[in-house]
Image 1: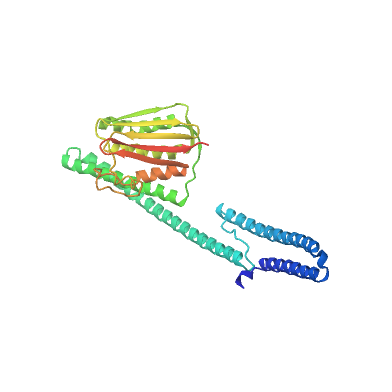
Image 2 (image 1 turned 30 degrees about the vertical axis):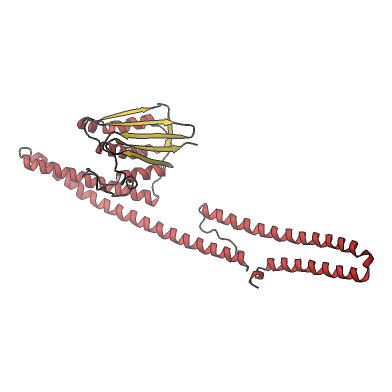
Length: 342
């Protein structure tokens, strides 16, 4: 019988059968040879058989519990990161067959994780190589462009095309840098250097970064929040994430627009909000704005590369935070970033 393939279950079955047979034989003997006291003997025999059966059952289930506990320990070690953890399954039976399947699944997942890790590392190295290869010609093109600007000072048409060329070179450089950063996050090669940082100070840095652009475009950036709020983070990376969201707000806000950066601390979290009164995001796009290179058919932005928000999301999530967005067409957009502090 397949159910008796497990030697522990087979032993439990045979021992239980032994006690049942013993009880039947003793009962029949008492009825045949001492019928006047048979009931008493059968009662005591039943108690002894029941005690023996309980002892056998306790031992069997105790061994099963130990086996399952050992398997659970190996599973938890695997979940914790030890990909070599395996459950012992040298014996026969349904339970050990299940353990064997779990070990097979673990091996498949480990092999897949290793393959994906190598693929991410290859992608990171490839894009890194491409990025470095592009830096030299980009630097040369920027120099040539600067020389052309000087030479074309009195030639308006050429000056216009040189300025357009400079804008496109800046876009290419931004694209290369953002691609390199995102692939590093994907490959897990970014090591965050966390330290307690003043949120107010970081947001002031963000405002200063965009103050000139805001003035040039007739827009305003307002900061609101408690000066004493502290957040454990990598200052450089988190400022870059906020920069990308604020840049997105400026890109989609017309002259006279307002961008508000607010922050507050609750008992268990720090929340940062970036809100604008710009054009808003179409409902169709809300679930896609964090996808790389996503281009909305409703967007009027012809300059965006579709990497700023995905990079911001990667940075925030690497810090253990979450980012959500709420938007209404022609009314504005709000990004809500939350970091647990407990």
